[in-house]
Image 1 (cartoon, one colour):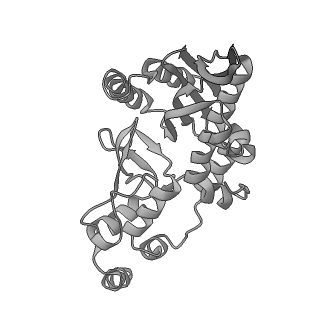
Image 2 (cartoon, helix red, strand yellow; image 1 turned 30 degrees about the horizontal axis):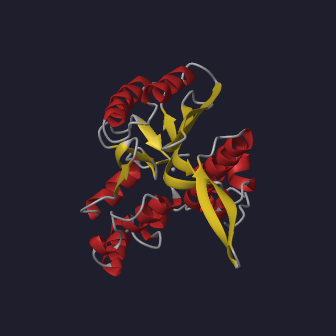
Length: 316
């Protein structure tokens, strides 16, 4: 009877290709998909895949639905999906949660509450209190910015496999596409945290030149051991290229002349610009802006998950 109902659902929702778009923006604990894999996969000619800046190609886990996992090292770690990724996964699973509710009989995923509590505990200021900063009020121009955040569950028995694969990928990225990425530091912090119950490490790397501007890279790695000895690891990376507005000076020069009974008067305005030096106040403004910019991404990608966990998030 279950098979008949599922086949009926397939006929109602139409072609699977219409249910999701794998080019959608990237938009997690755990519900086993051992039985789900047998039910869902035969009806999916394609499954959603996502490109991740640091982790590479991600696919839906067969062990822990709706988590994602590395396509290059399946099930070595499970990544919490963002709200946007989750919507694509749900659509691919049947649209309007048809397959999910029929296959599991339960749409109340406890992982949402667990993730929400973790985010609130570790990012309370960024998620709940940080407000959007008006770029027009800043003493610098944001030339380029890139922010990244992911939360991963690493199994105790597969932590080394995951970190070895991640280290190789991050080293490659840091020498090619993302030269500012602190690859070795990130993996070192994650490796250390797998040996303790809790760890938190963060740092800011800053470079500044009067003529060409500056770059600030912020990273944070948080690790918390779960009761089953697995670890929840969150990785945050933010990079910002900026250039301070020069200080404008206006000099007014009055000139007059007189010859016999002839005379004249002229005022000349000279504008010139002086490079702006970085002050302590400017530094703090830059840091505050980075945190607010990072918070916008967190709220965008995890708002519904936070709200599902009973945590109110203000609108941006």
